[in-house]
Length: 100
Image (tube, rainbow, N blue to C red; front, side, top):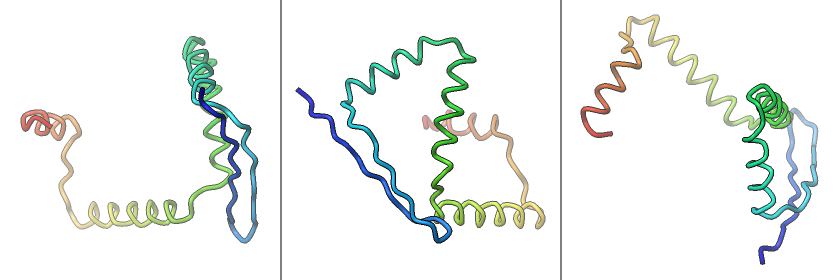
């Protein structure tokens, strides 16, 4: 029998410490909840997804945010310097032709 594990998550964001206790749940319980959610109408699943995503936004990973900002800036510089973009459909076709 699988033993549920309680998890404590903590961190620091903008000088503020946070800590959250997550209830103990087994993988089977998580699978059951997911199976039930997947049976819901699309609108209800979207609402649940939005709420789950919003709960993650409370503690963003600063390193990831900084990396994305750097990547966006790099892509803007590339576009401004004349880099030619390839449409996704073409990239996908090329990858598929290589068996990737």
